[in-house]
Amino acid sequence: MTTVRAAVIQAHANLPKEEAVAVHVELVRRASAQGARITCLQEIFHGPYFPAQQDPRWYALAEPEDGPTVCRMREVARELGMVLIVPFFEEAQPGVYYNSAVVIEADGTILGKYRKTHIPHVGPCFWEKFYFKPGNLGYPVFETSVGRVGLLICYDRHFPEPARALGLKGAELVFNPSATVESVSKYLWELEQPAHAVANGYWIAAINRVGVEAPLSTARFYGSSYFCDPRGRIVCQASDSEDEVLVCDVDLELNREVRNTWQFLRDRRPELYGELTQLLP
Image (cartoon, rainbow, N blue to C red; front, side):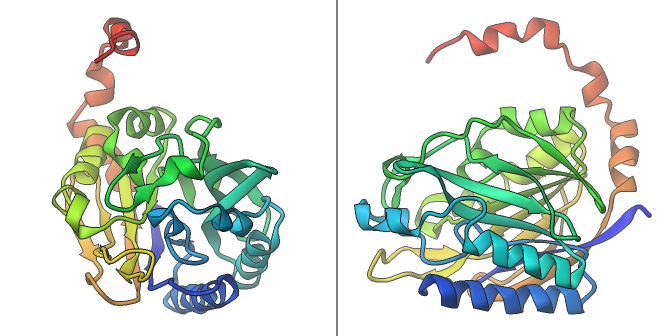
C-alpha cells in the first residue's frame, strides 16, 4: 500500500503535565477514529513551552525515555494500533537534558529516538540552550509499519543539511514538531519546508502549537500545521488558532514519481562539497 493516512495534532498546552497529556490522548483517539495510522504530536506537547523563560524550576519536568509520559503514549499506540511520534523533555541523566522525540510502533515498542540538534537561543522567547544539550544521535530514519519516517524538531527546519541527510537515508515522510510564534518565523513557515520537500523528494508534515501561554510569554503560537507533498504543495492545513487534528492521505508513490522527474539525487556532486564542512562564517 502506497497511501498512508497520517495525522498531526496542534493544541493549546499551557496546562499541568497530566492534564496536557490527557488532552493529547483524546486528540490522538480522534485521529484514530478518522483512520490515521501514524500521528505526530507537537514539540513539548506535555505542557507549556517553558523555554520562553530561563528558570531552573522547569528542569523538574524532564523525564527519562521510560518515564510516565512516554510509557503512557506507548499504551495508547498499542491500544489504537497506531504509530506515534512523541516529543518529550528528556533527562538522559541528572543535569543532562535533550529536546527529544521517540517513534513508537503500533504494537507499543519504541523503534528509536531523535534528539534536536540545532538549539536556538534568541528572543523574544526561545532560550533553549538554558535547557537542552545539542542532540548527538544524528539523523536516523525509522522503518515503521507505515513507511520510512524521519524527524526534525522545530529549529532544525532552518538548516538544509539535516533535511538532505534524511532524504539520502531514504525518508518518505518527515515530521517537524515545532513551537514557533508569529512575531519571529511566520514568514518562513510556508517557505522553508516546502523547499526541503522539493529538494529531497519526500512528504513533510509541519506541526505548530496554538495560543498565548501567559504569563510565560505574550507571544502567539500560530498553529497553521500542514502536510506538504514532494512537489512542494501544501495539500491540507490547520487553522492558526484552534486545537485541531489534521488528517491527510499521504501518497508515498508520489515520491518516486517526483524523483524520477527531478533527478536531484542523481545529479548532486558530493565529491565537491567537502569544503562546506570546513568553511567558517
